[in-house]
Figure (cartoon, rainbow, N blue to C red):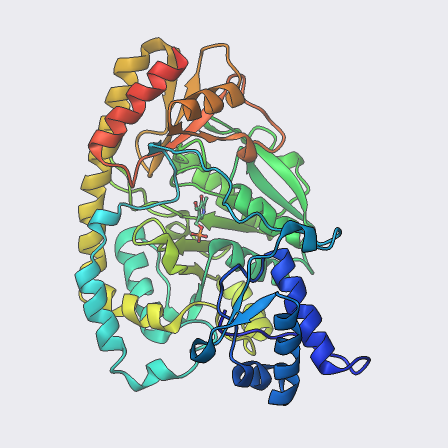
Length: 458
Ligand SMILES: Cc1ncc(COP(=O)(O)O)c(C=O)c1O
């Protein structure tokens, strides 16, 4: 431990406070046996006290056997016998909890690590570090160069006509929804969500205590039959690839939902989260491409490039832009400026589009392998849902077993598959539906994973 810092008060001598704090850290396992302690000088600097004070505290700890001095190497924590440990102190176990070895993890929310364009990314990051503006804070709504690139991409690939000035860069979809909620809440109380739907959006809306209403979604699509009974004037949807069921909103429903927002003077929040990866047809144009006057469009780089980048963007209609700018002009942007500048260069040189094209083929192949393996091994025992697009699919399992049994049984065979229960808000599926992501598994791992699933379930 190089640094220790804590607040001290005026009620007792400082050396006693330091002695007590370090003793407690050792007893609780925050300082581990044989861990090096900060030097007397360093600790005195961190705690803003004299060296004499830290020296006395260390001498006291040494005399009681808590620490030892190893001459020039400094002070080290000793192993404390359990009998010394105060009964009400919480002791952290030194050994990490036993982790189950998962051989094949069908986790969604990851990308293929072997195809990340690391060389190009390094090149552009290096270039960014030669730019003087890299060393300052960024623009409150995101870097202009990236907003320009996104505007171009949205027009070319998603049919959305917008300008850089309407684009807000942020670090995550949820963060954008929370920011958006701040300006919507004074006018709107209710929000309509797809059910099943994206739990992350639900959490963000709950943060502002919106009253939530639910729009039923089936494998055939959204059920709009009761659309007029809702109190909401805002709806959050995932039209290109419904999350989680994977259906695409047909054109007549797109027109209907836009009409609804216009009639109600409300808004449609369009989360276009993984539209780049559509395998059977060309990507559908975004809802915002038909009429963007009451559409708030949200996109991200998590699926198309890397979730760890934490970069997403939102396009605001004219009607909301001023309110948003007023509310956030004095806030620093939470997205990394370095990543923003890097990705702008990456896009400017056409690398992003090339990467998406490449990855569409890679993921299409993986999806085909997964579907073929599931069909071969499970036949009529499962129904595959949402295999036309995205980085995961769902399987409805017809085995008269509960979702938890299926997940636990798979774990025993070293395979991890995922529950969809968190996405069902008011509804629940008639049979268990599991989520299988494949993006960072190899073809061999996918094949092996499905074989193990079969062994575990049938
Ligand atoms: C429906 C939906 N929207 C957006 C996202 C992306 O969220 P983030 O911007 O935090 O990467 C996800 C991630 O899985 C998602 O499922």
